[in-house]
Length: 155
Image: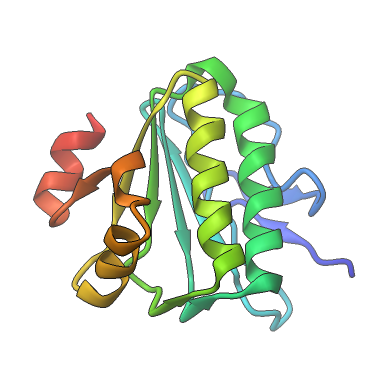
């Protein structure tokens, strides 16, 4: 399956296998979005050593989990030790499969290996927060309760 991605800041077409643009500036913003009518699965933003990953939702099933994992691992390879904070923004997500939950844990471990702290943000969805709590996945992340806390924690 082939698709093109567009970088909103520099208007570069991206290789879907690498999923990250070429410019290597410290505060470079990367916004991944699907083109030609294909649904967007995940968007990423890189700024001030913070990688913010926002799955579009409404759920993270098997298909979405693999796409998210591949794209985020590619970003980790690109930004590596320069990444200070990894933010998993789940505000748009209403359901997560067991594979999706496993990917969240895997991404947290990869961020830790790169030396970055991990923050998860649920937005207003208390059911997803409760799932993370019941599965004890919330213990792996710093949980941001609201946008203000997220901004403070990501610094």
